[in-house]
Image (cartoon, rainbow over all chains, first blue to last red; front, side, top):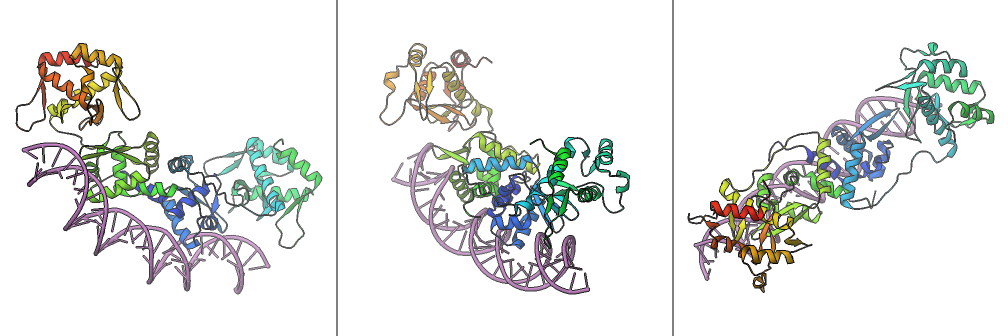
Length: 231
Length: 231
DNA sequence: TTCATAATTCGATGATAGCCGAAGCATTGA
DNA sequence: TCAATGCTTCGGCTATCATCGAATTATGAA
């Protein structure tokens, strides 16, 4: 009767309808912002904040701070597994996907995130860098490999040694708004974007306030040659 | 926001500490009575009754009525699986087994349940009957096979045709108090117990009110020859 | 039948917790 | 610097629900 395992605590976290809606929305594996989760659950941001704090304290979700957004994701596949099991017991199928990211396809394709490339191409680029072993992903950070340094020098004329900055990492994983996966930030991300512009591969859209990045025809080809995924 | 899957409903069932204690107590696979579950959860029988009704409505447990007891068990291994998953998320190890059945070893070994044999030997007997294909277990009932009828006639001088009774089944699975598994009840169970007594294999204990059944030396041997599990 | 035990139902109480309005930080952009 | 946005904290309201006392039903035992 006393000293029971805290199974009830975890279950009661999932037991609230608002929270369970948030959790199911996160089961896709993508990270969602607090506001989106609030809307998903049909509650105000204040209430959602309280729920999210509890879920985080319970170890079911973890936040990633990104500018003025807080992206939340499930802490692991085991959480998703338990949620699936519960859904199985409930024997329901309701899906309710959440609309994600910007409506503008151009924005989803390529845009500026602060000073580096984001969107589909940004995510694709980081994927490719990892696949080619040009960057190495450790526990908390990303770092350029020796091959990566050579690659940057020969292919993009970027001297890796000049990228060091006292208050900013060279490489940083930045959670992508539309893709909900990481793209490359940091001084390297910024330098690469600058190079793309200098090489006339891409330029920021002329419309005031637009964050869209337009790639030229040749720029797109060159980019695909370096970071294409073979599609 | 609306029309979500009822994952929250199931989770909230597990989310109450009293209910989660009951469920973990049932994870051993054994069936427990309402009173025992109440004691396990540290609540009064009234409260437990309410909880058990909710768990049953939620499809997590199912009852089996046995005399004036109601034995509850989990509805399936998937329920236990989800509970395990939740426990894993909670990352605790507390076990808290529930003491079960009578303290008296003799009572656990062999005793009278109404008019048939119960206890370790009773359960063992039904197991053996099933193993030897002398009885067949269908969805809701147990029935004697043709081989079983011959066995009863030759080994125990019981005529299966005389066992029919208007208001009582020939064979019935009866949930065992100490073992929490089924033993054989019904007119056949009663007839077999009577035969054991007549053959001087066993007799009810002389102490007033005792339900202990004492097997004689030879009786135990004969019994083991027919229903032994080879140990 | 009468009594005892197991379990349920009903009613009232009390505490927990979800909820939102308003205000307060934190970060970004101009 | 100021304004806007995302998010959190605080305070109070409300509703839900677990809990138990008392009474009721059902089954078994004497």
